[in-house]
Length: 132
Length: 132
DNA sequence: CTTGACCTTTACGGAAACGTAAAGTAGGGA
DNA sequence: TCCCTACTTTACGTTTCCGTAAAGGTCAAG
Image (spheres, each protein chain N blue to C red):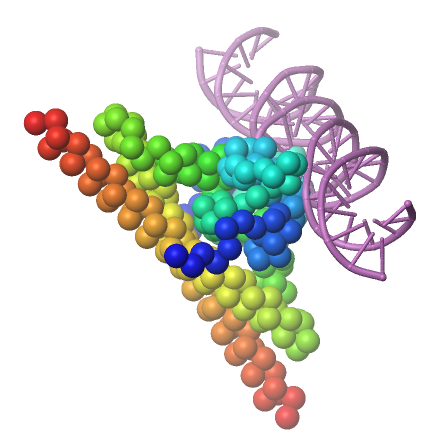
């Protein structure tokens, strides 16, 4: 099985995802990622890489690191007992609902901004005529 | 013309929008709203109310107060000269593009979470069978 | 062996968006 | 008149998410 590369250095991930090493170490402090070590160096596996992608996307959609951690933990535990799983499903569902509401807000904001853009463009055209 | 009510007190807006008075005063400090005064009391007009709604929605979609202020200012200025308007359109368009990308992230996150929910539910069903 | 690139930890700093305590004012009801 | 409620300002405190030195370890190249 041809893997892309078993391990990535911190610098490689920084380049790939455009984040600072400081941020990655911070995420590690906050227990969002836990790369292995070769001596003192961090070795990021594909799994860590995937988690990082998750983290960054979570951030972009407005989740706090704490919220992201909670969801990542749920992913990990996946195989707990039933009550655990029930709670997992509930938490995830709540987030999904929240994200859907957020999407409504985003759509509304886009619409409003685009409407405003058209209005300004119209004003512009009007002035262009008057200046003829 | 039957208006809903010419002026609102700070408490009324707090109740209506579920924000604290502290927040509203903060927005005022940051020049996002500028309610009139009757003596020392703040009087919020319908316009202020609309702006507040805008602010809160902006927040929900992840805009910073500074970004929100910039957009609100653009709304106000609407009637500047051409270069002004050009910049206005550009800024708004940039925000629209950013929001659209954000929506893509949201959709991806929703999809992933929903997939995970299904997976957990499936695990749950499996265990239910084994426990028979 | 020294240089340079890349990595490490520790720790203080800082913006954003308010919370919260303190202390005072304004107006209406009993 | 007294009191209660809603409002006010001032100002320091808090949380989140890192930035930014400071001070040094590691390892390959020259």
